[in-house]
Image (cartoon, rainbow over the protein chains, first blue to last red):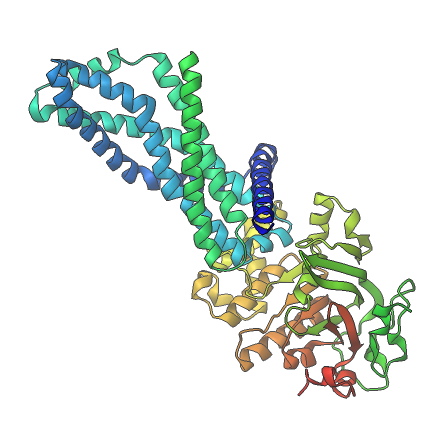
Length: 257
Length: 285
């Protein structure tokens, strides 16, 4: 009897949390269009999300491009298709690796920061203090952060694609000699509109889920310092999972185009 | 008479047996025991009236029908053991918790009938000092005070804002801390800044949630004096939740004791101090 009750309670909790998260996510669209617009806070969050992540994203993208080239070279060489490497790298970086790796890094770096920051504000009653001062904490904290991630993660993904190209080009020149112009032209020759456009569109969704889930986990943190750690941790796990789910859906939709 | 009303002990006050549906009771500060001299005489005009307030959390009934009122210019101190719902009670007043039953009337408005924007308009007339001050830790002291002004006084010029911020900091004796981050402040300083931030919007009612908890005796006394001077200067009505009997003695016009989710006793500090009830006496000795 007890395990049945536990399962019932767990299912109830799951559906309650899923409903709460959905309502929290949808509330963003209602609140985002409502004045006052917190431009200063949005810009500050864009600075934290965008500029402060540039080095990490750039370094990862450089390594990613170089490793992809180095590891695919032997297989391509065995087919005599070394000239295809720039195209292969371009398609895989632009369509998949660039956006997904950027989003996952942001989920780890930014999602956890937002979860911990808002969780800490919840625990120390700072969110309640806003509420009782007649300041809408959702509007001030969640909307600004989510707008920042939604705008900055696509830019970071584009930057990561570009830096991955540079990494791939340098790795290509370890064994072979190829000018950057030649490498770039070979890469672009294999890229089409359906590779670039959906890849950029999906990064907006990645940015939205990273921001909103990070904020949700912090906003819903319970009392106690332990909940801050839990909020940060679950923000990373949930937003990374959400990124992969969106990526899978995007792949299915793109496949239909 | 209901069970709840029977439980309210009459502490040498003929007016403490209150009929729930009638007008709010007389404040017991005018009983035959001489209370402390209030700095501003409370006017018998209720600014907060609570009737039959009920609040539960899952399987635990925290408030089981609280009736109380606060008169204009009066400081009501609420005492009670931990977990008796004192903080929950004042959180219900500002909509941080929503009651399961009963009515709360603040400044002539029944808060259960208010929508979000009406509730926010009412919140602007109420100040809330949190137990740990709840300063925004990413902002300096100046920015903490500027934040509510930026949100609610958009037409105020930056110069006027700055002057008001410095005036409020001066009131709490921390004018030289304007550029410090909250992490650099002591507990007492944080409470003072929290009070300044709350008062900057000139509330008509103040709610103090354990204002002296965690402070040394000297600092606690300073905070209590600040509560008294704030009341005197701005003629603010207030509710103070505390365990600190020195704070209660210094600041209270009237005291309410909560026990098991209901008002157990009511009276002035002196009334309650000389009570025959053993449970009440545990607070004083």
